[in-house]
Length: 355
Ligand SMILES: [Mn+2]
View 1 (cartoon, rainbow, N blue to C red):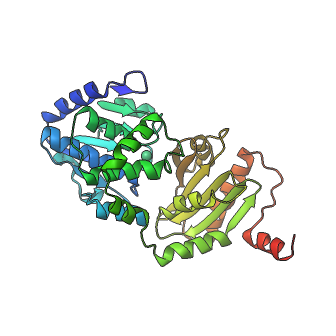
View 2 (tube, protein in one colour; view 1 turned 180 degrees about the vertical axis):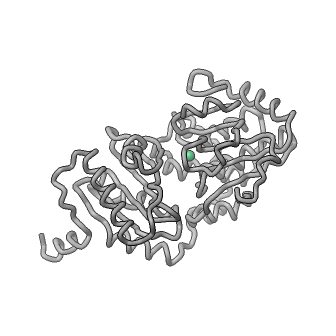
View 3 (tube, protein in one colour; view 1 turned 180 degrees about the horizontal axis):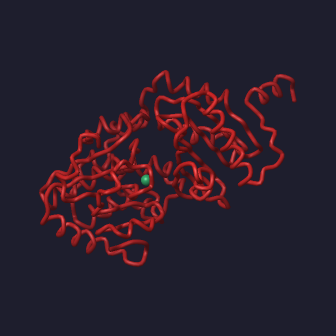
């Protein structure tokens, strides 16, 4: 078992883990729902490590959907083989790996009675995770893909241009070019990987065409935005792509004067939430768990977090109730009392009236 900074002998850990895997049957790699570049690249790297070191092709399973255009381009351009979790027969596999998420967090769809053997993640350690056979959780890393990059280096495994591009893009997007929650290992990996990437593919991934739906969502988000001083809240109501909620949170954090953003959108049987902050006295992961307490699940790091309120019907009333409830909670948490929000409509009025 290895976790935290105390024992960081990547070579020995991977050696022993690979030895253990070698004596076993089929390998399954589970990533989180609605996969992002970090878990996609991590899965690609772990799969490659198994191909090169134990001569076995692992199955990568996911739930939900890939909807962000950049992520779709990544999966397509880099030819990442993905299997929907629904068609996976877990009994066929003797090695189960989980990446960029942990058992019981609520953002992965591995049934709770399936044991995880190999767990690699950069989110804060959960109690239940200690039960896994091979645990490598480094919550001081900005990206899980950096850990996998270190595995390949420690094992002297050759990285093709597609894998290098995937790992590089994972670090680039998750840390916003090393500006957000990146530490030295992430910076080192980013710099080492850059020369190995395919710049044309990288361009295709970072500059995809966006669907009309994206712009309609931007419009709806603008219409539903409420600004409480340095806090911005927006309700996207019913969304057709789950990832748009996080995307809009990143988008609105760009607004001048804004330090904290909470976005929400109804998807499936609940309300998805995303929280972003540039403030160092607020931990987004801790704050979002308080927001959903008793009504859902959430997780995240210092500057970015996500969550879900369970069992919210898609009726406008239910969606509005969820918004009111979340707004009340976040205003109370941040001790914002003078709670008369401004809208973009107000801001426009102010401009045209010269105020
Ligand atoms: Mn991650």
